Image 1 (cartoon, rainbow, N blue to C red):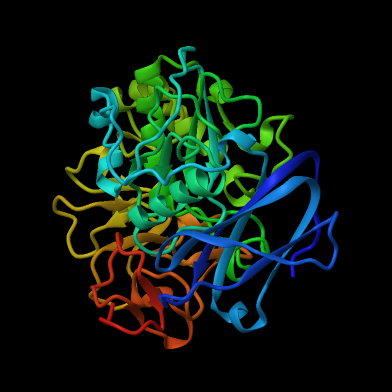
Image 2: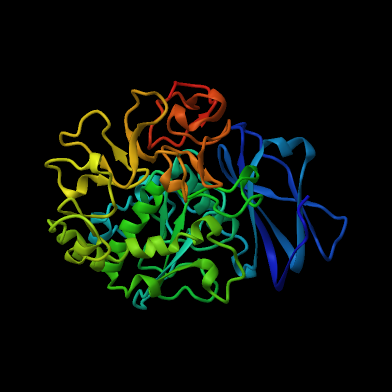
Length: 447
């Protein structure tokens, strides 16, 4: 049973997006009790389902200020995650037909298509009913979906859109863009339309939502907070750079903000694990600064601090080349360019320096899991770390060290899992960096 949820503004509808552990055809039983009718429990009705996701809702006869939910005891083990909302819907909109599934009538702009954004048609979006926002785009707000990250992103997007449209009676999915854990960027609500993602601050505001739960535990599925994969952060940073260019937005430090930074929004979104990395996103989205430095990769006069001033920005002079980090002398190649010096956690080539990728700083190019695994990645000699991005594969940084994942957790390679557990796909596919169906100890193809 949930705690009592109260609001200062009335609501007349309760909706829920339920993610189950199984794919059975039977929904779970969820009931609500309002503050005005204690002891009277009303069931939520199923509006949409595509296993393992279910959207449910219940209209109330009058406006309420308090409500709580309960799940049938027999169904509790089936529930992986429950997200629910209290909304006020105009009584004239209480009854409406379910919109058909199909692509939006507006095509993806050439700027967004060239930025690699996957259009709505690719994930089976319903047509929206939103109005155009004629105000110039001036800012971007970062969110998270607060739960959905497992499995096929297209299915998760259909679930979130159904929750927003059928459950909350909104005109479309709330956010303009989504970023999945594998680094792909998806179109949500058309960017020309007014979003529904920041209370009283949607005009001129583009919403970008990371798929996953980045709150502190126990507010995430399974009571464990997710960390932001580096591939996800890198993809979002690159996309935000292109988004700033397309809409002529200002400096990243002033136009890219987390949802929690708005005084009108009493929320912890996008969660501590993602909010703490907004600075990194802003740096990646600073196209102008990054472009200047990329154009000035090149030679310098020697090694050491006295030659660093010959390099652009925060690049440093090492062995006659401007690079990002100090390196060990043994790692300096004879003819590779500066782009071959890789950061912690990046892919490298342990087998050959000829045209391969080399590790910067005092790093070793290590194979992940199996000694012959491919790819390998740059890792600290003692495996100490400051964040998940400095660990190989899907390993997490805990207490300053790269830790293996527990059974049932997401993984990429066998070396990600503790206790000798294998990394296996649950759907019979081969595990790899783009495959979110792989878990430690899973049943399927060996990773």
